Image (tube, rainbow, N blue to C red):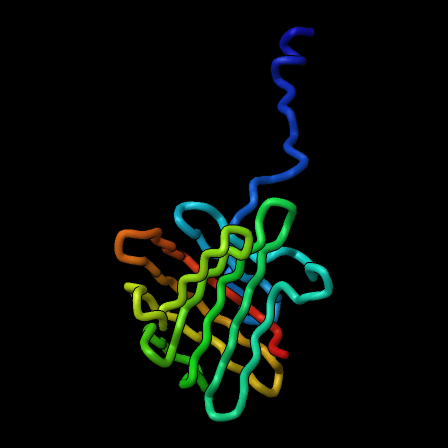
Length: 162
């Protein structure tokens, strides 16, 4: 009987969260490793606000925004670009920006701010306006001299565009 009890393994009802898979079908997923911790958008709307959206506009303007909201956190990772209109690699610059905001702690780091040291890129692997699908990968590092650093690695997204 002891052997039977010892051989039983407790099943974990809640598997460890992982990064979403890299897909290109409008799965509405977004995630990265932010400062060594898994970061994904909230699974559903938060107070009526979509937690994931991508909005392409005429002239190559593209906005991507992912929110995480719960009782302890209220954060956003976003990208804004004036030149993304097709697949390809876009390095962060004065016209392609990465943003991290922690609304609870009143922290806002944007690569376009003068006091931010930044690096990174966004890679668009599918930009399909007729089917409303935007997919890709990203990484960034946003740092204030003498301040905090926010570093995103292994970022990926697959969004049904607005």
